Amino acid sequence: MIDQKVHDQVQTPIQPDAPRLSEEERIGIIGSPNRGDCIMEPIEPVALGFEAFSLWYGAKRAIQDVTIKFPANRVTALIGPSGCGKSTLLRSMNRMNDLIPGVRTEGSVYYRGIDIFARDIDPVEVRRRIGMVFQKPNPFPKSVADNVAFGARVNGFRGNTRELIENCLRKAALWDEVKDGLNKSGLALSGGQQQRLCIARALANEPEIILMDEPCSALDPIATLKIEDLMRELVKDYTIIIVTHNMQQAARVSDYTAFMLMGEGGAGQVIEYAPTNEIFTNPRDKRTEDYITGRFG
Amino acid sequence: MAAAAPASLVSLRASGQLARRQFISRLSRYVFLGATLLAIGVLAFLVFDIVKQGGGRLSWDFLTTYPSRFAERAGVRAGLLGTIWVVGTTIVLTIPVGIGTAIWIEEFAPRNRLTQLVRLNIANLAGVPSIIYGILGLAFFVRFTELGSTILAAALTLSLMILPIMIITAQEAVRQVPPSIRDGSLALGATRLQTVWHHVLPGAVPGMATGAILAISRAAGETAALIMIGAAAFAAFDPTSINDKFSLLPIQIYGWIIAPRGQGFEANAAAGIIVMMMGILTLNLTAAIIRERFRRP
Image 1: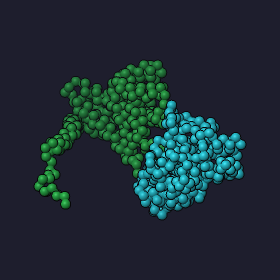
Image 2: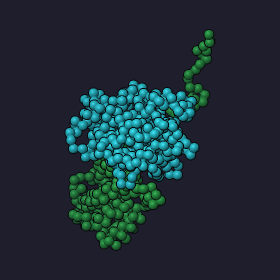
Image 3: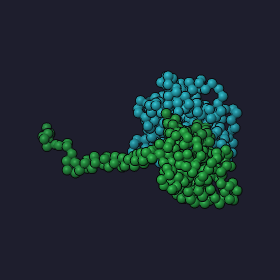
Image 4: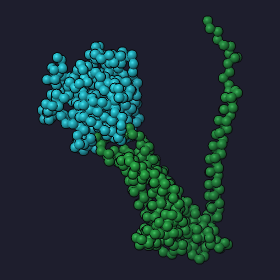
C-alpha cells in the first residue's frame, strides 16, 4: 500500500534540535477515515502539519477536520472554489484568525513539532516565523526602507539595517527598481512593485514559511509573472504556501496542490492532495477533476 | 452589407428627458454655491460688525490691563490669562485620556454587552447640555473634593464636558485606518501595541487633531458651566497655579455686554470677541499644521 510507505518515511524533523513528534502524532496524521486514497502525503521533511483541525466562526463551521502536511522548501498551492475555506486555512497557519471575534478552533497545527494553537503559544512569535503576504498589496504609508525594516525593528533587530534592507529587496527582486528611491513612499510604487515590497518586508523577519493569499489577484500578467518567478527563486530558502484562484498559476508555481471544497455542512475540507503534476494530469476524485477541467467553480 | 443609419437620424444632443435632467444638474451647482455663500456671508458680516465696533479698542494695553469701572481703561488681562490657564489644563487632561479611551475601545476592548453600553453612552454624553456639567462640577469638584472655584476644578469640568466629543472623533479617526495596515503589521510579528503605535496612531492623527480642535474650541468658548463653577466676573489678579481662582474671556465679554449702555463697554466686548477669535484661529492653525504633517506620504 502506498499509504503505508508514506507513513514510515514522513515527518522527518526539519532540524535535529526540533522536538520530534510522538508516535501517536505521526500515526494520527495519516489514514484518518475520511481520507480515502485521494491524499498523497509528500514523502519529505514537513514544515507545517494540520491535524484534525476544525474552525468555527461563531456557530458556523468554516473548516472541518483538516489533516494535511506541507513539505518544507516547496511551494504548495491551495485551490478550490470561493468560500471553501482556503484563506481561512491559510490564516490559521500564523494565527491571523485570532483577530476575528468569535473564532474557535479544534485540533492542532504543528510547526517544528509544536502546536501553534496551544495555550502558551504567543501568536506574535508564530507570525514572526511564519510570514504572510496578502491579496491586495498593503505597504505601510511609509518609505520603502521603513516598510522593509519595520518587522525586524519591532522584533528587536540589532544589526545593520541598511544591509538588511538591501538584502531583502534583492531577494525580492526589487532592489534595482527602488535603490535610488529608498526614502520614497511605498505607496508610490506600482502594484507589482508594492507586492514585491510586501514580500521583501516579510523576508526581513527571516521567516521559515511564507503564506501568500492570492498574491497576484490584484496584479497584471507581467507583474504576476515576476511574482511567480520570485516564488520559484525563494522556495530554495523558504517554504511557500499559496492560495490561488488561478489554476494555471497553481500548475506553474507549485510542487504540491491541495484541492479544497465546501462539505455538506458548509465547512471546508481537503478533498485531494498530491504532487501538482499528479493532481492536474491524473486527478483521483471526480470533484477535483470537474473543478480542474473547469466544469464548475 | 448592413446599411448604416443616415447621419441625420442620430442626434447626440441632450433632448427631452435628458435635457431636463441636465438642466437640474447644472442648476444644482448654484444652489450649493448659494448655501456656501450664505454661511460665508453671515460669518463675514459678523466679523465686519465686530471689527467695526471693537477694532479701535484693540491695543497692547487692552491685552495687558485688568478690568476697570471705566471702559477706556479696562482690559482683558485677567480673562485672557484665565482662559489660557483653563484651556491649557483642559488640553493636558483631555487629549491623553480621550485618545487612550478611543484606542482601547477600537483596538483592545472585547466586543460584549458592557463595551457596547460604554460606546452607546459616550455618544449620549456628547449631547448633554453644558450647564449639567457645570452643576456636576460644582457639586463634585468644587464642593465634594473641595477643590474650590479653581482653575483645576474648571479644567476638570470642561474635560468631562468635551471628552465625549474627543473620544468619538478619535474613535472615528482610528476606524479610518484600513484593516489591511493592521494585518500587515501583525503578520510581521508586531504586537498589538506596536501596531497601534507605528501604524494606527500616525494614520489617525489628522482626524484626531480635527476632533481635538472642535472639542477645545467648545471648551474655550464655554461660559454657562463655568459661571456655575464660580469663575470670577471681575478679577484683578494673575493666576499663577492651577489652584488659583480665575476669570475667563467669555465671562469678561459677557460682563461687558450686560453692562449699562452708553459707557463704551460695547466696544470692549467687541474687542474681547476679536481677541477670542484670534485665539481660536491660532488653535485651528496649529491643528491644520499637525494634519498636514501627518498626512499620508
